[in-house]
Length: 257
Image (cartoon, rainbow, N blue to C red; front, side, top):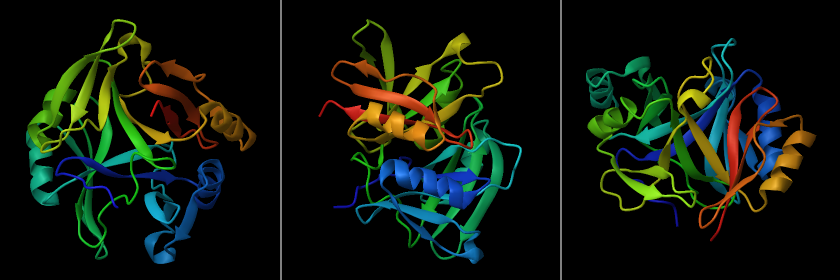
């Protein structure tokens, strides 16, 4: 059964890369994905699937100076109204609403904290067909220096709710939940001074895998590198943050079940 996404919830991810075929090949081999190139008319935008279910995509980069990054798309009932709401709440429009054939209407933004994200008003394309399972996105984390103004922005524009949860080390972690949903889709990590000055606040995408260490070794074999070593939090899971050969950063995660 395809996942059900409520309004304002993350429901798709993609990456803009300077070399689409090479980037697709890296992730295809790493995660066991199948790839479908939609052709020159789409800029060779390539759909990625796991066991016949779409999980995301990789397309061409229009800014060769920018490092590739996975972009999180939030589901919107009206891309134009969402754009107005983003601007009113202090966000910046990077790309105004644009129809993608008869599939969706998308727009891209930067939130007040500096993290880039996008919205998508679904038409024929209804988002990821697999979520929270092996081979697909399983968690999303907004990494910031300060929790404000990012939290208030997403609460105001998309109606998200938050709650604090105590971690095993005694620290508190902020869980993010979309409006009209009961389960959190991700969390907020306040990195503070640990975030290098040249690194903006950003969304980290976690893909579900069966063995983090094995995925890290395979990423290195394919030309990628480790940003961190695998880390485990009791009752949460194990994850590792990696960098692909084009410097795109992502994480792999194994849950406790």
